[in-house]
Length: 107
Length: 123
Image (tube, rainbow over all chains, first blue to last red; front, side, top):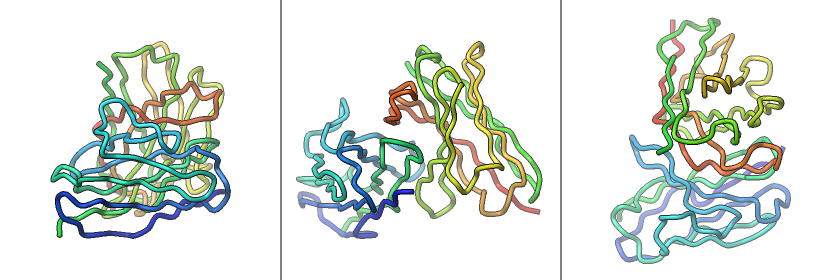
């Protein structure tokens, strides 16, 4: 099965910063990648699918890029409500494996 | 609006079985695939199983194959997760998730999540 590896494990940033999270697939997955945001006590929220398509209602400061084995999630102008854990997910062909998560904390 | 409500969680002894249910409403249930995802305490998200819209195909992560079974009742808009031989490391919040796709596409897009139900495996 294809493994999904995220980096960094966690990061500290300030409001207004630009943050980049990387997700690597152990084999090429074309653009079959989604990003989710998870806040404590809240339900996971789909942010981006097919690597770069913003889900309806998601602020445009979130963006995704990449293909095959390397993908990035970028949050520009980080806002207080963006402090959360972010997960990538392989989205074609089961198992739909998640990455290990990246926690974005307040500096 | 889309609603997914899980039930059936609780405390269960190691080796025992438990069945989770997820009641769906607010969308045409028979059009979409459904999944179960869990999050153990302090850990990340883990996709467990998915079932196609007609219930004629299902997939599992290797770690639960043979122990967990996903099924659905399209007449009652409900998806189930039957879990057996439970272990301490099955302790987690279990989420019912709606797919934007039916399953035949082999794609997944998890657009709605239930609030989750906590399963604690402990003696």
